[in-house]
Image (cartoon, rainbow, N blue to C red):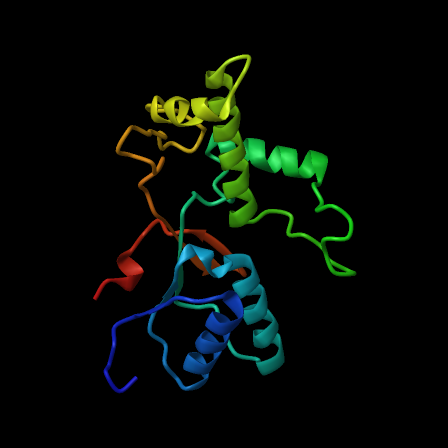
Length: 190
């Protein structure tokens, strides 16, 4: 706070980041606080919302989270609509014995949407490997993927020197108790 920082980038697990946000807001520090995608945005926001109810303070304002996939709230994207349809229809659950008693999965999340997109990509790779896929076919099949449309308005491409399929970062902010896409940065301009 003494440095008069314009913003803070917090890197950590959701519980630690939520505690930092709580403590910063309790101290009157209202700068934007950003988290990177692996924070677990839904768990972070749930902790902050619970703390809001207990302390009668707003902890979810001025938050920005980066994501490696678009928002599962953006139903203009075909992959989001398909993901939500399948999650609603199949209600996937982890195998018994791998969760704690009373575990209830989130209906939608950035993590499960990322897994869904990874599965779509894996299916495409397997199709390209042919009828008798072998371990030795994987790399060549992946590296031939160019401009693959998986339904997120961003094409996936690989190559011999390119092993990251997407290069875009998506930004979200908290509104009404959930992370939604940042559509206008004016609020954070100085």
